[in-house]
Length: 521
Image (tube, rainbow, N blue to C red; front, side, top):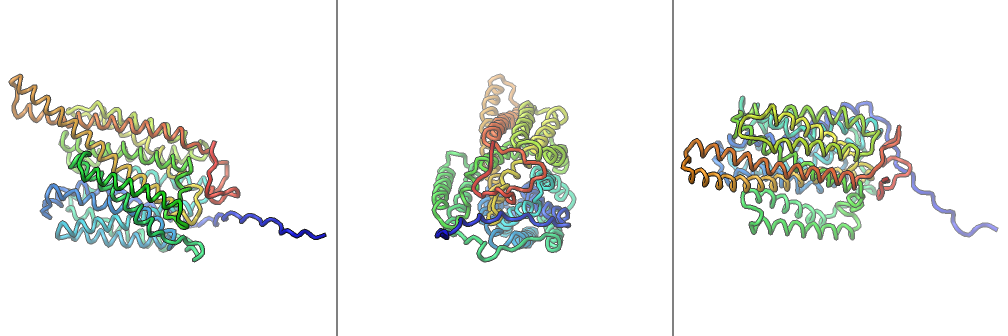
């Protein structure tokens, strides 16, 4: 008698890893060039800002919008940019981001008014929000062999960690020997080279109509609106203070929008950010580690730039060059330590020691004084921080983007950039508030004591102000070191993924692949 029931349907086979692209390493150069442009643009304008302020007659209140316009658009639109890459294809999104970024940079370089410059910076941030996730997702889909992927991520991690320092050096050179406009114009030739290289060397299959996720417009409004509110609140917290009504309102509103966003994502059929991407213990832990780690790193850049220029009297170019040892340490750590060990050790055995090393480097900076201390304190701190961040960035990016379905690779990559951007914005505002309030208290107390002792004078006043500034930096950096140690704890307790097996391919191509799970110890 023949059975009446149908045999069970076989499970759909996992996606097969594509054949290795013979031009993939040259493609990595193109991706790295574009990523470098995005990362360094966050700092290259900082050194040029005083010159731009004078020429365009900006007030001290308005000058922050040269930075804020970029960070608002970049941090707020990253999730949308990642989903655009999933919708139109990663290569198309990459090319669109390059063209738009180059055009916005040219517009900013030619700006004849502050409003025009602010608009150009906002456009730069918007196109960077498309470019950065597309670059990272192209990296993950181009390199499917884990051994090769670890090398590629090593280069990417070196750029992510060292790009800010390179921006300071480039900004110093361009401002000192040309003018501030070239800090924006320089992106145009870089983008054109990357555009030509991408058109020739990068390959990506555009998703078919059935494979494309539909655009979640309510999710875009809720998620991007919440991120914009939080990033803007952090930028306003520096001049206004954390207890200001506008800052508190923006923070509460941003958190409320993100809570509604999470509720909506759990109910809509085609979410902007599928919650399984961040619910996964390993991936969620990696994103938290990224956000915490950049707090200390961004704080170090901010305070050391002021310390070297204001306290020690370094020129902009000399200040940029002073960060070179940290950049070199990040490159060495990413490419020679992390890239070699990532396929042999669980990720937390790189992240945790890396965070401890970085915290140690930050701790050394708490002993700074107004007297020159570059060789004795700043240099060893930069080396330790660079080695530590190189050990953090690469495994974090790998864990955060690994095991995600191809249709969600763009938005998954965007979450990494979002964690970095939001962590940097909150951390910079928080540490700067701690530094300024501590400095003000120190200066007031010591000036009062000097006046009581009858030794107040211009020389004493200048000395006390410098000592107060350095004291504030030290206290804020101590907080940064504590946050970095918290990153070490999170890495050890939450990121429990095993080391990959020898000769393994990326998890999204593995036979046991399940987009909702990632195996852990």
